Length: 357
Ligand code: TXA
Ligand code: MG
Image (tube, rainbow, N blue to C red):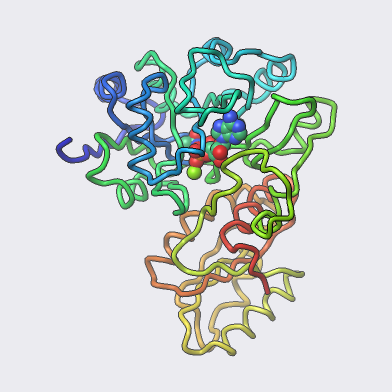
């Protein structure tokens, strides 16, 4: 492989010639990073074992952690599932294409390397014109994890992918900043009850409304430390075992009411004068942090606490920016775990390993 081609595309109307070239690389076993509506993915031919193995090598990803297959139509999803359940059909009609990944029994055509040997497969039909054009032109499902080095925050801009993967993959398709900003919701429909394995842009509340039943949220999803302490039983998804989304800086979650959060951040700055502290705050609290002594090395407005979608879309970029400003500590304000706020709090609890003040 000689060098990574970095191609800028119009997200609303991607150049068919550039898409065709990238699809050719996929068909021949190469790696192409591409935008989705959630985060950037690192794609390979999903039915080609050798191509998929390269994803694991490039990311430094443990082979026990399975990948999502991305499709460009519901028919393609149905072909990859061993059983397409009634719940899958109802959810697909309501939310797909969109930020919802369904775990279903796998069809025999899906290679072991994709599912890490599990009897199930993760299927995702993304709502992004570049992703859909690439999958359709490739003519095969595309296996894709987030396009970061394992353990780093998922990339929400082409530049983030370049920083992690330059020189390691054939092509990066840059379609600008992603919309949702956190990875897709993962819902298992493979067991008796629907199980939420990762909260994301499609919310638990929306899924429960459409299915007219409760969704199980395993304890590990919001309390990863219970598993590290060996108290939780078997993990329902291999990915839940791995530390994730971490910037180099140590993340500390700031809990309490907005006023309490401001007081805690101020106290922390005063108590740690030699430390390079970044503050990631809701827009409502930003004015309270201006003019502080000692000042934070980085102050990020994540968005309004009334609109957790805004916060989700800025979180990973702010993690990376905190590292760029050489922060040692990132104090991040917690939000209510409702709607997309649940996805924000899930990423925050994992990035912080539950350190909180
Ligand atoms: O938004 C997204 O989902 C992004 C974009 C690129 O589509 N992809 C993504 O992939 O976040 P990744 O590999 O970073 O996360 C996929 C998660 C992992 O935690 C993995 O363990 C889980 O999905 N997973 C995959 N297949 C599974 C299966 N059969 N059963 C349970 N969990 C599974
Ligand atoms: Mg990932």
